[in-house]
Length: 97
Image 1: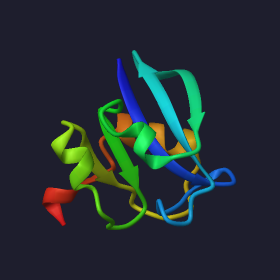
Image 2: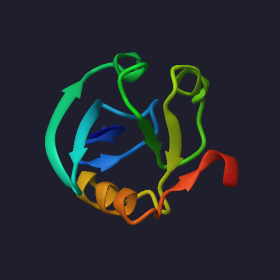
Image 3: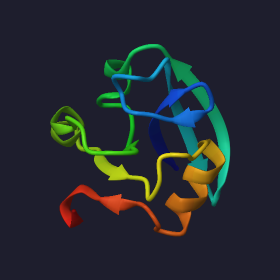
C-alpha cells in the first residue's frame, strides 16, 4: 500500500500555499482504498510515501522523512487523475526536472 499526500483547493491539486485542505490517499493494488483529509500540510510529513504537487515548492521536509516528492504534468488534476498518473508513472520526479 502507498499513501499519497496531495494539496487541494476545492477538488483540484494546488500548491501547498493555496490549498484549503490536504488529502491522504491510500492506494492498494491499483485502486483507491481510502481518502482522509487534513487541514495542515505538516500532518502529512512522516506519514505519506509520496507528496505530489503541481509545481516546484519546498519539499525537503518530506525528503527528510523518507517520502518522494512528485510533480504532476499539468495543474488541472483531481484525485482520480493524479492516482491514474501515479499508477502509470506519468508524474515527474524532482530529480528529473
